[in-house]
View 1 (tube, rainbow, N blue to C red):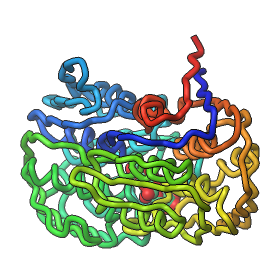
View 2: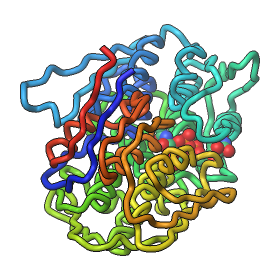
View 3: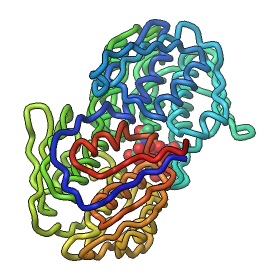
View 4: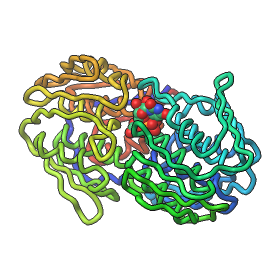
Length: 429
Ligand code: UD1
């Protein structure tokens, strides 16, 4: 298994290109199942999760062609042409869905297009129980008949789905995607109340509009979808990754330095960027991105809780925690989305952080220095928080199990090395 070696202490200076958003690319790829025509997606990040979903979609009969690349253009992301002329298999097996939770979102499109689906209950990051009740209730409201048998969701709608009013009792990104995708091919109007407002949901909705669906309320918590009998092909560019943007912004704030994050924009993560002036860093919007700068001086502590968009994202909680481990004072971070998303705490402690956990709240007492140590990546976002901490720690850190990082961060070592970090991947051979 690959490991990453980091010698801490270098400031970051330069330019980091931001990739397309993983959390938009995945549901957009799934949207290709809704039409027999070609869906072209540009700016798709080259990530383990994207490649795994590509395999899952191929299994269903989706044909995927990837454009070739000229040397030197790799940072522009890949262009995927997806064509689901015939869905040859409506089963998504446990071996695949258990490796990536988002692949469960094929359920809605399969029922909508084929009138049937058999999809394994998901796995994914070990950050909480992560049920799928909201997905199932939403699809039932659209007329799907759903049973659970031997770890599989078996869904039928032989006469197709019909529009309905769905009020989610809790905000769920995945359930919103699943129902939104299905509703685009349902008869009549679907209204989703308390829909997730994450920018990636908006990106999927905009793509569905290009494919022919009628959707009002994009970016709000009430989505009104006019379903169609058939959808068409489209060309869509995946929006920039706000979690990657925030991660690098916090890394620069942690190490000090001056970095421009290119190809992204502040509207995607206002709450996360608002933290930076409070802890002592500067943020400015540039023509094509965001500049983050921190000179010498102390990092100030922060009190924050995670919330659905537009609140502070749970996917940046671990990174923010790494940033304030060396603050001048005590920070308090409350995790309200996932109950078990603190696995990074014990690893940060190995680097010298002083963190106490009480239920859903972490209290982080700033220490003057972190010290390098061997640590273990536990999930996607937790592992990148260890990278941030290792970049500021004195001496050498070795991060084990970096396959978690490869699921969601494209060319991380290369992007950081170009800005002056001493970071190196050690391949298992
Ligand atoms: C997505 C993101 C993930 C992010 C999360 C929250 C992708 C691929 N993943 O995950 O990176 O951390 O949103 O922003 O986009 N819940 C239920 N019942 C359900 C569904 C969810 O109770 O049927 C709960 C979950 O356990 C969790 C909360 O709702 O406590 C939010 O989860 P959800 O928004 O669904 O997360 P994902 O879509 O899995």
